[in-house]
Figure (cartoon, rainbow, N blue to C red):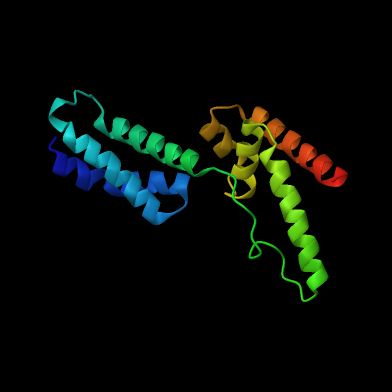
Length: 157
């Protein structure tokens, strides 16, 4: 099979795979473009029986890596805080957000990553388990521990 045929046949499917992971069309397109460029550069030397499965796995892995690269603690800003007309409530909310940020930063990295994937990205437990190479049960435990630790940390401050 020629590369052009492969690209025309598989591009839409590959973008769909990347989109399901990244949840952003532009990022999915970029990921597929990078994978396809890599495939094109080594097309003549690739000796794969099932190029469709190989390219699917490459896109999946690249999208997961892109998502992992994105996962970092983001500071809560006022736009994330509930709007209130009372200035005192905004100050309390800002102070609470600062406490929460500090508590999140102190979580073990696996708990922090699992929690952020769940809370900020809205991923399901199976999706998080796949991204983190963990069992779904372990992901549930990590998130539960993180939430308990955050609740304890914020109450004591």
